[in-house]
Image 1 (cartoon, one colour):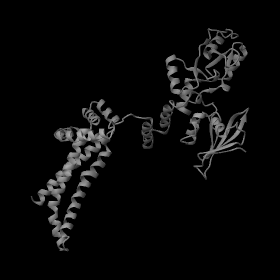
Image 2 (cartoon, rainbow, N blue to C red; image 1 turned 90 degrees about the horizontal axis):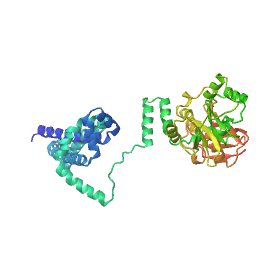
Image 3 (tube, helix red, strand yellow; image 1 turned 60 degrees about the vertical axis):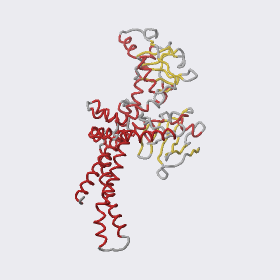
Image 4 (cartoon, rainbow, N blue to C red; image 1 turned 30 degrees about the vertical axis):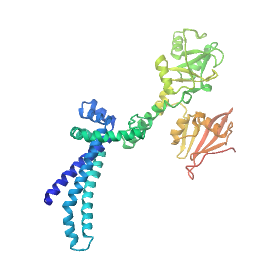
Length: 441
């Protein structure tokens, strides 16, 4: 054959190999989520791609048959077509015994470079740009090619499956989507500008409902406002005026003897109707949902949905009340400052770029968000910043006691009856990755 005919055949072989490389990467890299969206919108080709991904052994066998056959044939033709011309070129400068080898090496290098560039590198990089779009476009011709290679592909797959079983290799693809996968997609969306910073924060908080326990969002025991059965009318009126709550616990003598709760709306109706408030009775007291403090916020949402309640009392393993929680508390956890009442005290106050005043009752998850800390040590042993300090110091902290962790210094500022009210958190600029230390001054 003439040089022109050889070049035409080599170009055809390179195009065929490039098509197979393009198809191989596109079908392997096409994401199932996007393909399912296309299939649900009526694109039958997307469903074919999904089916091929589920049973890809025949495709990969056919693809490798085609790629290797084309590469071998291209090498044979290229070497025969170009070697005489390279040999003639080399002979102008060198007539020794290595002239044949040099001509062969140059022709081999040329053909190999053409195949690497146009049949391997460029098609694969193109396929990675839009794998779903390309996979859908090539699925019909590639299915014809698979059928053509079916007999040889079946034989090769049989040998491969035998070897996999012999070495006990599991070839089932794991397609379960984990939280880490979703988090990575959200991070990529935030970096690309598809998700706004606040939206990204909302989605992260929703997933944290599975990990955060009820105590991280509840109103703690010492802050619970409740009525007793013997509460005077003046006291009830004063508490209604002083605390802007919609629901109040009703207890017998103390907070651990809970009877139920009253809705502020019911009491206000009695006031408007000039009815007496001297006795809280069954007409106003409602049954209260009681939950253990070990529930996650996600589990509590399920309880609220099944019981149609929006208010619950949280008790510990000793049947002591540790706090109360409402549906609004969970929404505040998810939405953050967007739904936090303006008049509510801020738990985290930023003084400047490197220091914060933080309440000891601040949930450890909120602290990690505010300080951009990825991980806290042994988080199963505490739920708040105060708990973290007690856990690290191994004692009841006093003012000026400090813990250094993750490039931050946590210093106790105020303690009230053994309760850590406030801490000063300072970023250590000289050693942002400082090891954990504790000190008591």
